Amino acid sequence: MNINDFNFAGKKAIVRVDFNVPLNENGEITDDTRIRGALPTLKKILADGGACIIMSHMGKPKGKVNPKLSLGQIKDAVSKALGVPVAFAPDCAKAADAAAALKMGEALLLENLRYYPEEEGKPVGIDKEDPAYDAAKKEMKERQKEFAKTLASYADCYVMDAFGTAHRKHASTAVIADYFDADNKMLGYLMEKEVKAVDNVLSDIKRPFVAIMGGSKVSSKIGIIENLLGKVDKLILCGGMTYTFSKAHGGEIGNSIVELDKLDVALGVEELAKKNGVELVLGVDSVVCNDYDFASASVKPGADIKVVPSNQIPANYEGLDAGPESRKKFCKALEGAKTILWNGPAGVFECDDFCDGSRAIGDAVAKATAEGAFSLIGGGDSVACCTKFGLTDKVSYISTGGGALLEAIEGKVLPGVAAIKG
Ligand code: AMP
Image (spheres, helix red, strand yellow):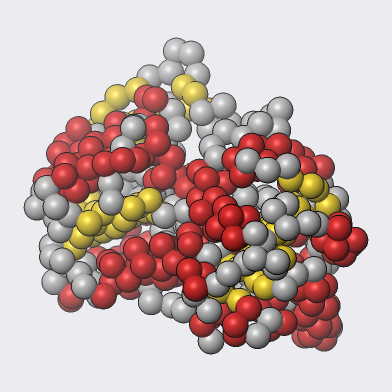
């Protein structure tokens, strides 16, 4: 079913949203992008004369109740954004009465789905090597179905609008869809928009296509990097992951972040790029520091910051940002791009001393966009970069998904989409 063709009048809709918003130590929302992202769907349901049962996860409570990750903390913000009072069900699996009491035009927010291990459907407290693991997994899958059935029982129809978790086959993102017929389940507006943005990049690639992959680890991005090497004209690699490349070539990288068991993976990426005729763009210099505190995202008093070649980083120093020559190289590579995908910062952008690399990339992406490129930004940190540098209106599309976006770009069918579209 298409959400535009569905009339919610008189219906209770259970909507999976991604309200996994960042909170500060006082439980206040520091970025409400995800709440705003879900509003078109929720408002359509209410405007039609329906009722919303809103469900989400927050953080990683690992199947246990954790008040720090309670969605109760954001109830008032959701209510304010929606413009209607929002009731709260403090146990998502025991919300039948609250759902039954819900009147049309009202909304009910369920407590964090991941307080229940059934949401993710992974057996708890048992190692994969344990001979009893398979039986435990089977049992958990049955419990997951029961959990999904309970959630489904609250509503007349189901809307999947949580792109950020659409790559997971969880009770609320996929399994629940089995309990609704095709006419009563659909993707929400945000999901439709996200899926269209990916299609825009993949189905009709305007060249040159330049991808920028940054962030801390090669290992978490290798799937997408290999996949992109079959699609892009240029691949800019930046951020902490590039020290694994320097090291693989025998460079001195001091204390920089590195994955020593991935040196061959880095060399493999270079070989594949060559084979596919993709220009691999790596930084040449780094901004390094000898006393940076990751926990407080600050440079310790008296610490030294300087620029050195990325393969000659002194012992006791670590590379934390792209140096000026690298920035120039990245910006040059983005000149004239017609399709751009950016995932992952070029440095520790959270600290103002090490955000220039990410800022330079952001500015170059904005410039290319102004000259006609389609730019797709995904992953929490690249989105945070765009916000920090005031670029949100200067790029084509900012995705709410990190892992989900990358898997979609890899060409994988997301379980959250498959559950609706079959
Ligand atoms: P990821 O989750 O892999 O996309 O990585 C994002 C994180 O990478 C951000 O929190 C950055 O601070 C971090 N990062 C970027 N460059 C570096 C670097 N050179 N050293 C350590 N961390 C980095």
